[in-house]
Image 1 (tube, rainbow, N blue to C red):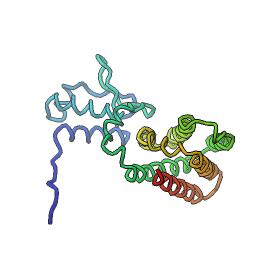
Image 2 (image 1 turned 135 degrees about the vertical axis):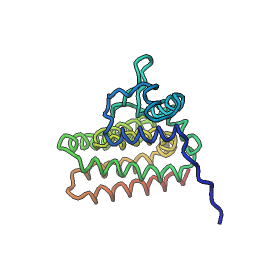
Image 3 (image 1 turned 45 degrees about the vertical axis):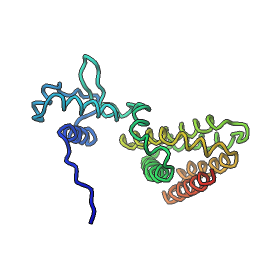
Image 4 (image 1 turned 90 degrees about the vertical axis):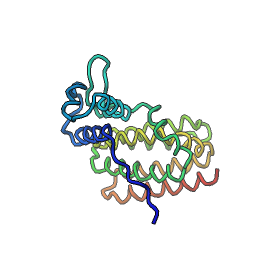
Length: 232
């Protein structure tokens, strides 16, 4: 039997995991100032260099906000992860469309279903406005970038209003990672047409009392998208 050696977590990774778990669990609240590096080093029993590396890594993924001369703070849920950081983190996987779409389906389905569970009349109304906006598009006249920007706006709205800060950041990550593949698909007018119809089904499913309608619409959307990408 062949196996990969188990990697031991470094001191920096252990500090990262501990702080990240406290942030995600809510023990450390958004906007809260963290102890200074010296204090954290004493608390964890590690060198200040380990603390500095851990904080920089947490800042890279948007969990911590480092203010030069002002200390480190727990980021608010609205803090945006730098696009460059996302692209750098996943640069090796960006051209593996099969894995990318598997990740998209997993994450975007979870975000939309969570948003459905937390939907309000205001949210339903806004999503219906988006569906009408999609139906009114000139499919042959709109550019790929304009179409993608509208889709990104819709998904950002859903992520921002799903009620889960982690899902919100995951949606932001997917928006960045999928940019190239989305443009490739949307370069074909027929793909824009089918994407519009499936997106409208997804948005209108928020008016239904059974979330199965939404899940089926999302499954149909991704099945169609995967079929389109294989043609390119």
